[in-house]
Length: 152
Image (cartoon, rainbow, N blue to C red):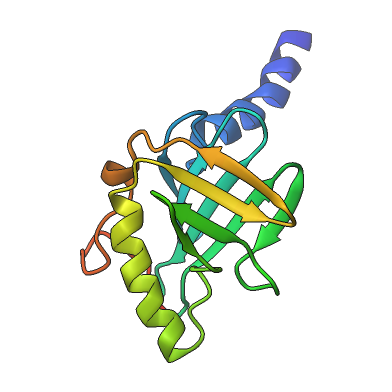
């Protein structure tokens, strides 16, 4: 009986871990899908990470979350966070709730997909993130497999 109840307790936990589709791959970009949101994730193995979330409802815009030196930031909160791609500084590029912001996002996304050197910056700290698998994980904005979209 004890063996049966141990299996009963562990089965949901193991299924939850195995069925979880969104997780960051240390040192490389990965993608997952959970509850109607495509997530594009990367971390540096030291707690610094970027999560780009793209709802598939066709109406909600891209949102990004970053952890930089232990502090959490969101593109939807002021001041957000900045992304530096191959030396070019993009100020809160995932905030797309204005016409100019949306145009900047499109330019940024193209650059991001080709990045060789990627950094996040906020609160006086700058961290470097890996670019391994980035171009395979992030699809072009016009791609049918990419649900990321700007607000405008």
